[in-house]
Amino acid sequence: MTEKSPAPQARALRPDKALTREERLKAALKANMAKRKAQARARAAQEAGDDD
Image 1 (cartoon, rainbow, N blue to C red):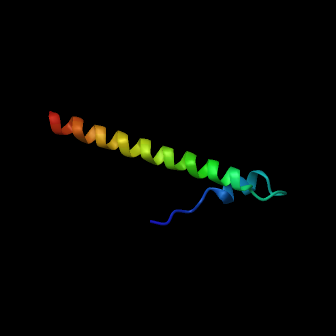
Image 2 (cartoon, helix red, strand yellow):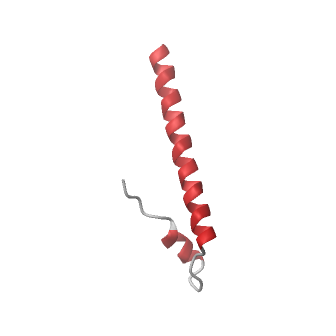
Image 3 (tube, rainbow, N blue to C red):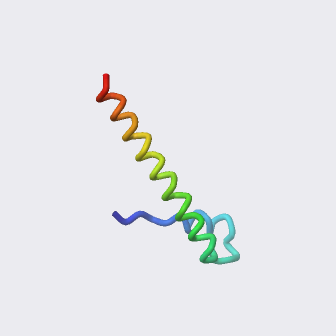
C-alpha cells in the first residue's frame, strides 16, 4: 500500500522552496484523517444496510 505523497502538488504552489518537515507531516496527517473518515463512513453505511 504505497501512496504518493501530496508533495508534488505543494511544490507546485511554492516552486522556490522545498517543503519543510512540518508541512510534510501536516499534509500526511490531513490525508490520513480524510482516509479514516471515509473508512468510517463506509463502515457505517455497510452496517446501516445490514440492519434493513
